[in-house]
Image (cartoon, rainbow, N blue to C red; front, side):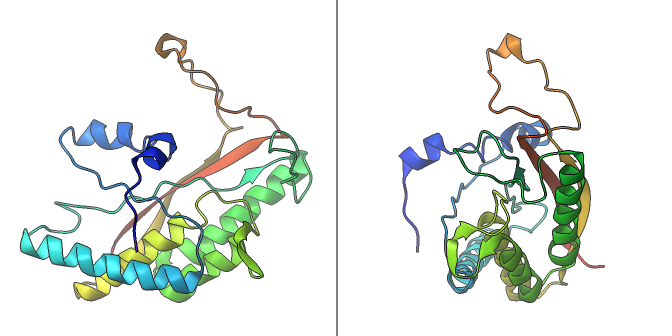
Length: 216
């Protein structure tokens, strides 16, 4: 089911986006980075259930408690939107203006509401895949969420792990939704970091933070 590939890990930027936030609260931690390539939903279910079994086996042997000794984190952007700077592709389904911006963010929020918050189950996770991945070709976007594979794969892993450990169902709460147009760029010239992408009405990205815990 897996392949160890250091070269792919070196160029992948999604994990490094999480590290400063994790390190702020936990200076000493270990991370197992899993890159999720494109795959069908059936394949996601097959692999994530095996991964959940492996996590349960290791955590049980080491007497680790989920939420205290280990956690699952999913790196993800929401929609990548606009009609410029996307390699010649037009991702502005609703138009590249203020009305299109409002329509796109509302569409994002609808996906989050229908699929990713409240009680977690495979049917709702599958609905997310239906929103973001084309039915005739799972390798292609239906809606340009960067995490169209990592999100359902990670949530399925959490769902099966919760079932295997016989704990209450996972329940999601949206912590924050925002876009690259809401706040100005952070000045980081002292770190010698350049701008990774423009942020304007023709090229922007949305983000969401969602926390999951066992229903009480």
